[in-house]
Length: 497
Image (cartoon, rainbow, N blue to C red; front, side):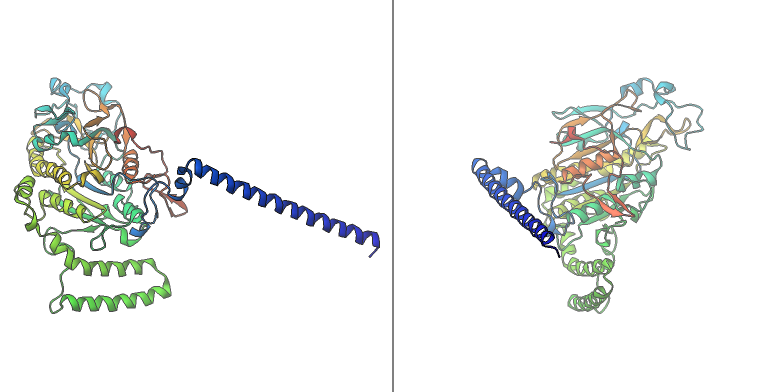
């Protein structure tokens, strides 16, 4: 190699080494300066370093929550969802409309009816007469909330509730409407809200399921198990139904000839075989099955104690009403919901059927109110006296409301389905008490202001539990899916305490 070429190569290498040394000196000096600025900043304002080392929210990794940490500090730890299946009539319970009584029997104005969808059950009606509520309304509490005479007990808790009178749904028939309220989709197959919460936040109770479901009332509309299904989330996130007859949980009792210790040995052996298989195939469903067997074994001890109301004071049992000791009744399940909340169950849902009042509404809704009013009010009061209402979010509502017009012009009057506007009541868990949000028109048929879509409701409930609905996603079929879907949803800040 020529001497001048070799010298040029050496010069280039020297230049590169010099550049590297210069870059390294620059990097180290900047790091030193940066550390000095951080130290100075923490002396001036220690909160600057705390904000990074202790981010907002709480750690849920220890509870088995996939989130690891909530996005914000939650105001609620758990949910009790009193789902009134069938669509309760807001116009006969909470949304007082004197105009309907004034116009009773007259055709609803076309300007009010507009071009909204109606069901096949009323589409062929020759007219749509206004139907004023046959029940008297009055104001209650410091909030002045309206209640009909059907709800004297709930009226006493008026200042604990936030009434959203402007909820709007999309489906007009029961099954897709219930599915929409539970999963954020009209088509079955997605995880329900309880499953999302179990998945994201885990469980605070090792001896009971994190997600428990109970059913009561008249089955005028089917209440099916996919309303508490885990969808594509892990199987452990599925809701566990408590039965009203027989074993409270299916197969909880031991078979004849097997005692508790013997069943434990069997479960340990089966679990070990499942673990061997899990190491081979890595199927998370096997792990869920192991957890389910172990939980069922522990529940053999915890569930009998849970269902024993003998430790409850007499005044508490009296507060819930005469049906409180009858398994399967709404009152019984409301008291059980409080006991589950005490034990840290994350999501408790009561499905109470019988609100689908297409005909003979006055008599049917009286029965429904009589079966639910006292126990609902008792649950609120009971949670308060146990110090649980502040961090328990209670939801009361159905899949949609009922029409302002009568469904039948012959025979006893009823109301048809009405997803355009209906009432959902919230209490506790960071919700502002004693307020009403949203206004419907004089006929209770359209929303004048404060519309809350179902996705907005979901976003708000998640917010109370410390979850940002936009950041709580699971990859499914190539998409980052979430409870609120890909459509726009907002947290209804007006109802937050």
